[in-house]
Structures are given as structure tokens and as C-alpha cells.
Length: 241
Image (cartoon, rainbow, N blue to C red; front, top):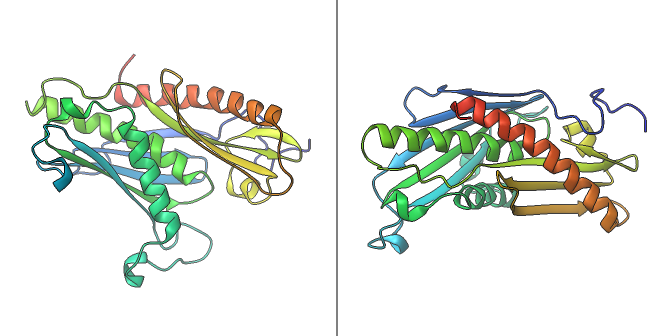
């Protein structure tokens, strides 16, 4: 295939960085950068749970997602100004919440809620995947804060979780699509995978002709390779081996 717009090899991630402690007041925060995509993830702890969990002795992890008006090439209207979230926003924040809950022992949390706010500062493809990967770091830091304050006696996180996109570009599977690639790919997929390799969620769509099972397996293999790099970056960010 011809060179990708970014010049990357088919199996190459964009440069990734995870900067912690960027929000002064949040119990946990992480600014994740994947190429030109930047997402600020903050974790807020509240000593309460939704009504459907009261008295059950377990906690809740949820997420909210949004894009700043100039995260993209043209200004987007604030959803608050419209008084209604888009279907895309609702779908993404539910995905983030599901992804994080998949690796949390909610009984070990007790009756508390942690909300992950994922705000896209700059969008260049893969914002939902970056949000999930950054939110795990913010959540880990929030739990660590609660342990330091003797609010929690043990770490409720059971595993890591991260996400990455893949796609078929000019007939070849490629890893970690940026916007230029995502807008022209024949197929694209988002993979949410745990540190132990379990699949939390897979979103795969053909944009033109259907793709084959062999293509899907190739995308999954690329995703696992990319996820391994992201998991290593998460561990470095929070200082675990």
C-alpha cells in the first residue's frame, strides 16, 4: 500500500503520552495524547450511589464524554446550549462506563460513585478509545487517593483496560486510525481489551464492501499489539510494574 497519511507503518501506533495530575481538584486525572487527539480525563469521587444501588453495599463507576467546541476543524455547538446530548455522545459515554466497570470490583468500593469526565480538547480520530485508556489511569489514581485517605482498604481495580481503533485502508489492515484515515477507510473497528486479554467490547463496521473473517482476525491481532503498548504506557503513568 502507499504510505499512510501520517507516514506510519501499518502496525504502528501514533505517539502516546499519559500526563497525570493535570487537574488540581480531581481525585484522579490524566491528559492522554494519541497523535493529534488529546482527551482530559478526570475522576470525581462522591460518597453516594444511584437510587437503584442504595443499601446494596456496592459502588458505581460511570462516565460523561464531550468535545470542546474547537476540538475539530470547525466550531461545534455546545450540547448544553442545545439542551440535549447527541446520540453519539450518549453512546460513547455509556461505552466508557461499561469498559471501566468491567475491571472494577464494585463490592470492594462500598457505596461510592466515581464519575469519569472525558473532555476532548483536540480530535484527530480515536477519541473514544483514548478516553477509555486515559480514564483507566484517572480511575486508578482516584482509587489510590481513596486508599491513602483510608476510605478504601484495598484497590478495587481487578485489571487494566484500554482501547484502540483499527481499520482496512487501501485493502490493508492498519492500527490506530487518525481522522484522515478513518474518513477514507473501507472498514473500521474499535477494540476494548483488558490487561489479561479479555474482550470487553468490539465495534466493527464496513464502510463499503463487507470484510472477511480473515480481515477481522487481522484487525484483532493488530489491536492486541497496540493494546499491549497502551497498557505498558498506563503502567508507567501510574508507577506500577
